[in-house]
Amino acid sequence: MGVARSRLDLLGVDLGSALDLVGGVLKWIGAAFTVPALVALGYGDPVWPFLVAGVVTAAAGAALDTITGEHEAAAIGVREGFLVVALIWLVVPIFGTLPFLLGDVPQLARVTDAYFESISGFTASGATVLTDIEGLDRSMLFWRQFTHWLGGMGIIVLAVAVLPRLRIGGRQMLESELAGPMQIERLSATIRQTARRLWRIYVALTVVAVVVLCVLGWTGLDPAMTPFEAFAQAFSVVALGGFSSKNLSIAAFAPVTQWCLLVFMVIAGVNFLRLWLVFVQRRVGEVARDQELRLYGVLLLVGAGLLTIELLAGGFSEEDANMRHAIFQGVAVMTTTGFATADFALWGPLATMTIMLLMFVGASAGSTCGSIKVIRHLLLFKIVRRELSQTVHREAVVPVRVNGRAVEERALRSTIVFVALYLLTFAMGALVLELDARRTGLDLPAFEAFAAAAACLGNVGPAFGFAGPFGSYEPFSDVSTLALSGLMWLGRLEIIPVAVLLTRAYWRA
Image 1 (spheres, rainbow, N blue to C red):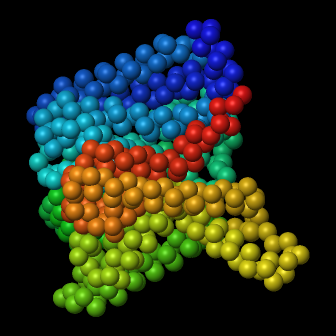
Image 2 (image 1 turned 180 degrees about the vertical axis):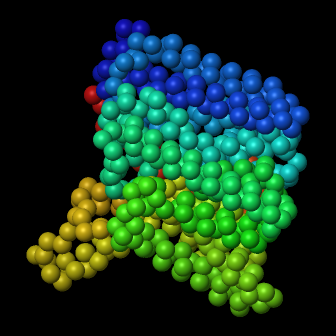
Image 3 (image 1 turned 180 degrees about the horizontal axis):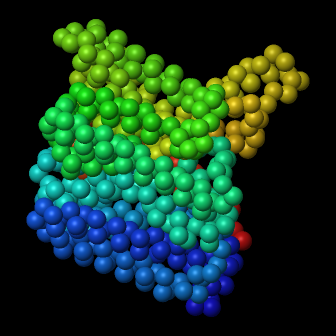
């Protein structure tokens, strides 16, 4: 143990403390299995897969705590923070597969498929290998939806009890959840209090969504909206996930439900820190002047407008259907929710191009969305504008400002690096899919390979072709399935933490 410890000190990474924190999170996840177990009990489904999964997960967490006991009091620094974040999003979905593998779920009998479904849930991606979603037991459906809710912001909040131990690393973990190039604007003096407030927003938004959807069912406005369906869709929409309990996704529900979910997608795509300022501190005017929020609204309108033009040209019989489908799909793709009210893969070329571009936009930093995010697009525009200005006025010092505050050059560089890495990862992911398709004889056009890579890396979910809105990723081989799982993992982590782990500087004392 002493030799191992000295080696860890030499490398400059306290692996024991990092694993101890991962063990703490696993114990909380183990406790979370009691929720679907209660649902199984209520519906008469087998309870034991969830109980066994909970015991195994909690035992694994306790084992890590025991093994790394001497590191328990150690502070987690920046280096350990990167490692912890990467491990949590990689390891937790492994334990999330246990109910699928232990229960009678033939569609997820393959380990690669079960892991794909689990990591898609926890990363709030919404991609699926299921071909008959409604064929699952209620409890399994609930667990599938619940992974979205836990993954949206739940995992990091489950670690709130140990956040005070993280110090600098705690900030790193929180920044991973509220991803974006801008520094965290603390809502309170400590990270723990900030995380608690974000948790309250998340829970409150979930409760409101459940109540609104239940009311639609109780009043008869949408007879298909039962309490179970209300919880299932609410878990997904608040996490900006995209899993639905229906084969036809949100197309299975009434138009009024689709409009309501659209509103919740827009709200959930806003920076949660801004939501706190609006709903708790009543600082509406300050939030209304936020440049990222304004650009977020403009891009949503542009995306919906382009899709509306395509649908009108396509000759839809009802104008209301045109507007509803166009706005809903534009918002669903841009916020990386992945819900569907129509098969956009069948729309015209303008819609196809628009949806593909929206996959690279994302919603606000500080929300649970994936993709590049609006703030980075805003910064890239400002960087380009500054470079053009300095081309004419070479001696001019032109700081990049957001909301009146100058952005550090380091943040600007990180934005450029992230976008470059994002596009490179996207291209490499598509290349792997195409190469593997040639190996297995799968008919995968190049555009569909690009779309699948973009949808998984951006945590969007549905793509085009057989992986479209009402389709499935099931035709992909095990190799491609693992590659797509890796893309979802990288997308949720925003690539940088993993890239840092692969550098020599990270492991150098």
